[in-house]
Image: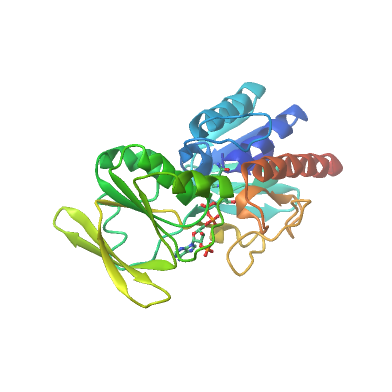
Length: 304
Ligand code: NAP
């Protein structure tokens, strides 16, 4: 019997683990993929207070080691179901089941696809959702990045360092990304901004992606752009359906909870990008994790 089981080893989940074990509770973190969550693919973080520059990989690895060194246990299994039996929660996974007093859902969010017909088939053959993972395959070639948030702008910046040309395609002419990122990218000679435009078609031959059709929203005109690679960076969507029996979801699938991280079920808490909120940043994920852990500890103490 663990005091708390944390679902997800991203920034929110690992921060929760650190706070739980430092409060004297036993904590098990269960992660379906690898530790770190989305930030592991970010080349350079420069907005985490107190750390001027760090790669996403180094940040995530530091957090993971910190949680483990403090005594958190980590298992790499997929959580398939949570059964609420009052003061005991049963967490079923792909490999077995575990009991605990409180659960923190920190499941993050996954990359949103464009939804074009042949997109799935072209993954690994020209379509990618991770510039730092796959960018090197496109050295000296022409690529496109789709999106207007920090991920897209950072991906385009990263790719522009070794691709011959990078098209940045965005559906508006205003960016969600930090102004500094936009200005930095505009200063690059090998980056072309294609704004107010959406990708309407992915064209392929037997080798994979060869070009994209891009439609200008204002003129209605479609332009064909030859690219070897397309990096889709149009945000994330949550994956919480398996937990809707213990946590109410909003219309987009995010877990409904306020700043106290409490779901509608006693002993079930949430933290990070999987929660309904307006700002999803590393700092807010870490903050959610700390709050959720301390709320869970308070709940566990109230049981005895
Ligand atoms: P995001 O900020 O949600 O941006 C998603 C972008 O994709 C938006 O520009 C959006 O356009 C566009 N988009 C959404 N759906 C689309 C569709 N179907 N077709 C075409 N375009 C579409 O996502 P993100 O860039 O992945 O960032 C997620 C969070 O992580 C943000 O809070 C971001 O600041 C943070 N982040 C931080 C760092 C860092 O601090 N180093 C790095 C990466 C990400 P509209 O603008 O028109 O809606």
